[in-house]
Image (cartoon, rainbow, N blue to C red; front, side, top):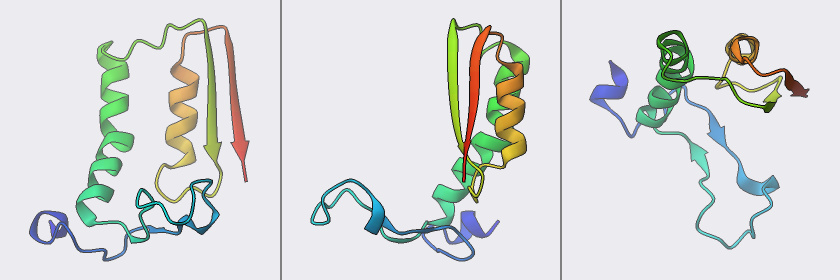
Length: 101
């Protein structure tokens, strides 16, 4: 509800710190600060519902020759359970889930 009322608010959202990115520090492509609520909600909706629904309906056919999934164990946006579920549903024979700290 708050995302609909105040979409640009950064209340309780992840904080982006581009100081360790590989882009040059002077670039304007690096966002710094709290994510807007609307961005956080959109990403949460996609990762917590849309991908799973698309897999179940067949819209996201994971029948690919090979798949590498790289997941951050401390990722505060995409829960590891969602990543593991996505990985398990992939129908390819050559797949790997790489968890990074």
